[in-house]
Image 1 (cartoon, rainbow, N blue to C red):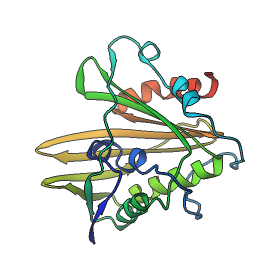
Image 2 (cartoon, one colour):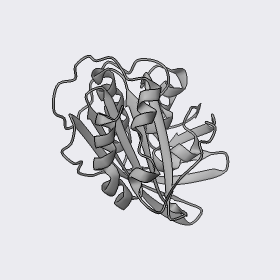
Image 3 (cartoon, one colour):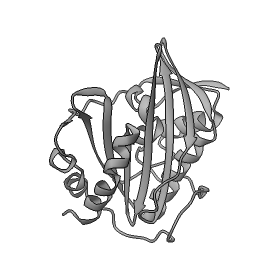
Image 4 (cartoon, rainbow, N blue to C red):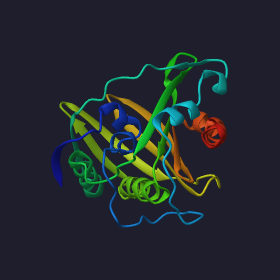
Length: 227
């Protein structure tokens, strides 16, 4: 099924995390609970402010020598078409209309390692009720993992995508993890993406698999304790 949708899924997010950064819009997620591994039952708690979340993001001193923060870029509303994955196609439509995956507060930082555009790591923090975070992120992972291979197009750009579930570390209250493989213009890249919910905070670390594994623990620790 092919359906063109104008979504908040900028191509940069599509190539690396596809739905997870771009699909957070401004309303409540769907009511159906996702199937995933988890810990405690989500409970109500007031979300943190965006300023608090920004203070809890990793920075260059947390990551160590060789990391440079990338400047924030303006979000683009690209006309993105998903080919061969109905669940993701539907997810894109829901994000475009604001009918799903709304997280109240968010913050993000991206870094390159040793000046290489292919060695990157990014962190996203979201805060909302635990139930909304659990349903929203679970729905995204379920949709992406439902299609081992598919294509994403924008204009003349065609990206071959692959998604594979991978073991998530036993951290926080709930965990999700996947490997994304994308090929475009003769180049192939692998991105790891791990999400951890701890109370009313969702931590997502994405990027080169080795960098994600190296920095996930400290990202979670700072998200829990920083002021």
